[in-house]
Length: 281
Ligand code: SAM
Image 1 (cartoon, helix red, strand yellow):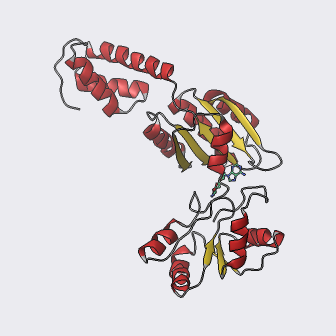
Image 2 (cartoon, helix red, strand yellow):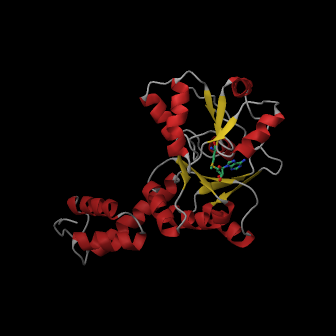
């Protein structure tokens, strides 16, 4: 079940009733959840369930449920399983035919998306990207062509690096940095990825927790990119084989080689290049 992401009032009546009524509560950090229970005068026993003891604890939890006990699973904040432990527990409980219910509530990704003012009809939650720039850039490359809003979690210390890599790979899309959601110092800062990257490179790590929301590529920018790609390919095809031209333009633009090769093939087929016959990548 979900617990608050900052404002202790963001917990449902059903969640409080359930926390009071279950036999035990599995939580990431017993000190954090004890604070929540204290606030609401709940005395249900707690035990830890986190990435370091999950494999050992899972059979015990499932055994207790199979024996008829009701066990609640909470994370330190927000919705369990969303960049938090719980997925394998739910999967194994389902595999064993045990009843699983979720009590919905707070979640930082959805809160940031709703506040961002960016398109919310299609979005992709990416969680935390790899910490190192190479892995992060590769992950951003994978989603660059998608026409969806992207939602990412990041630590404040890595925020500037994430924004710099996102600006380099995705271009100057509209974006939002949402900080300390539901808390006293909640802040939603909008700007292009380039502007936000420059801001945090200069300002340093902000305080508190952050979510980054990145809008989809805008249609005009996509068309301009496509026109640039075609013109670069035509130039390259004038003096190179199709394979070499695609490799050359892929390196120059940072676009995936497969995509560039497919476009080069199309240009070659429609006779829109120098007529060099297609070869294989
Ligand atoms: N399960 C949680 C949820 O439902 O949102 C997320 C847990 S994840 C380990 C923690 C990350 O969520 C933080 O690093 C931050 O990116 C985001 N987050 C959690 N609470 C937040 C808040 N109040 N304001 C901004 N971001 C928050």
